[in-house]
Image (tube, rainbow, N blue to C red; front, side, top):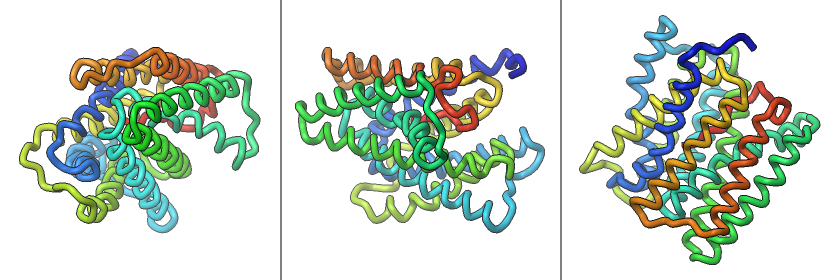
Length: 297
């Protein structure tokens, strides 16, 4: 891989940090969890359209037929991911919500083994073992605390499954359109898929306070995802993995300071195992380099 531009790693750090504030903003929003997911997508579409036009010289376009169908499928997968993840955020700790949702990082190698007949390397096997034990500790501790925490953890794990499906579909779309255009189009389809769900589920959809939702759309979807889309094209997997570790660290800090979510020894041990897995899975040979990084928030 050629030398990365100097801006690539700082962009990755800033993008990852911006994503880490997403769960907090979901809790601050005065709409339903699925409503906040809808507004995150809907409010992000116009600035993403502008960015795609500025960076790629034209408005986003996709070929008709199968490519358009895949883009719609990606939007449905991402909508399911955000819906269950936002429901989980308000039912578990911010640290667990961030760590468990990023389990897509570990599910992608499993998809490669089961569906693509790929062989796992030793770093990948070690990562999956650490991830499994870490998730078991986190979920087990939540089950001890309350059924509500356990339900939140399971929702965040379900979100990781949907996000894995989203990444697989996005991988199939590579080469049909530029990265920023693809982000813009998938965001649009996701918003369209979330709207009827937000209208049907309990809770308000129209906010009284737009600030958390605007911050969620501009911070998580435009700034966070936009910078990561730029950075991952220039960075090695291990650099991406290190930068993404900022997310659970910031989320855990916010949870402790703002909501009194002080982790105990079991939570710390489980979190450290998941962090170790995140690093191992991005070592050279630890993960299929063609796959996009799993960054949920």
